[in-house]
Amino acid sequence: MILFTLIVAAGTGGELCVSRAMKVVGEARSFHPIEIVKVILRALRVPWMWLGVGMMAIAFFALLGALSLYNVSFVVPVTALSYVAGAFGGVTFLRERVSAQRWLGVLLVAIGVTLVFLGKS
Image (cartoon, rainbow, N blue to C red):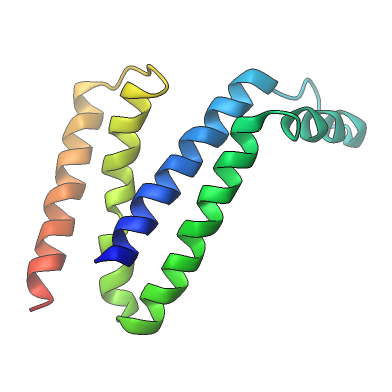
């Protein structure tokens, strides 16, 4: 259970931090290699990027641990809770607006994860 909590919390937290960093950095104006390098270098100067990458690394290693203990047919669906956490994190941390249709999708994912989790026993 600890591994799944780490996967969802650290993975989603990392994605939210990286998203916040990229909103500070902005988008590349073109796909020329020099422009891409400039965007990457700007991103590396934003603390949110480093926090996000660190959290995503924790989630990755927790995922490896979970895959060594459980079947992939159980691990992958349960980690879909990241979609639920991402929607709530986007609303609270990034101040995003989520439509009713997206909330319905989040609800369906949560129901699916619950069914997979209950089917484990």
